[in-house]
Length: 280
Image 1 (tube, rainbow, N blue to C red):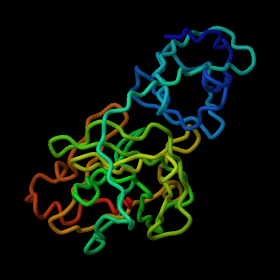
Image 2 (image 1 turned 180 degrees about the horizontal axis):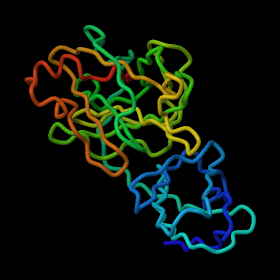
Image 3 (image 1 turned 180 degrees about the vertical axis):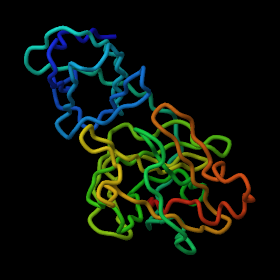
Image 4 (image 1 turned 90 degrees about the vertical axis):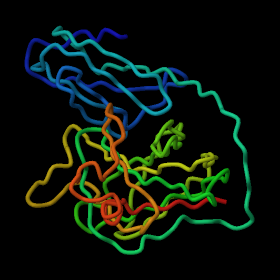
């Protein structure tokens, strides 16, 4: 826990920058949550965000992939200059994993047909992912992830790729240990190289997800009839994959839970995000 002091008595914004305790490098796109409001936003590319002296006393939780969560307590006192907050890197214990290296890359199944689009579901930290349980993916190194981006919205807006293991048919532990931020180059299928991270698909498969980013000056709302972030395609995979959604501190929910009057078979026909994975 860290006491954040010196928030001014006069109405003004005060800048805060997040840095790594290990080497003082910038920690970009971290999640900043206001505990009393259960809302928040992401820091910018320089790891900065601002607080207004008009804000009431509150507890802030800061979370970033690869770092321990930090808690800040806001007080109304004078803040002089920019404050720097150092996040402590998280130490990961590598689990024993079988590894298989194929001679040729293998990409998960293409959808049968496109069925719709998906805007950001829920608040900050919202994710939507596809459960990939094809045995041909197991124990192989992840080479790239593919996302289908609609022409609606701002396809150049950044988003984060997150990957999880699978347990009993649901997303479980996060596999990604770094914050992977990407930008789509065009509408349609975009492929993002992940080979340098050396992640492997565990037994049982994985879930590959898009996390929407919400900056304090741009909350992905519809402005002038234009959505300010990416719009992910939805598709029918037949009897194959299942889509899941979650927010920053929520649990994973099967997409079909939102449409209880449909049978599971019918829900699986149009509530799957258009995501693919290439392994080798």
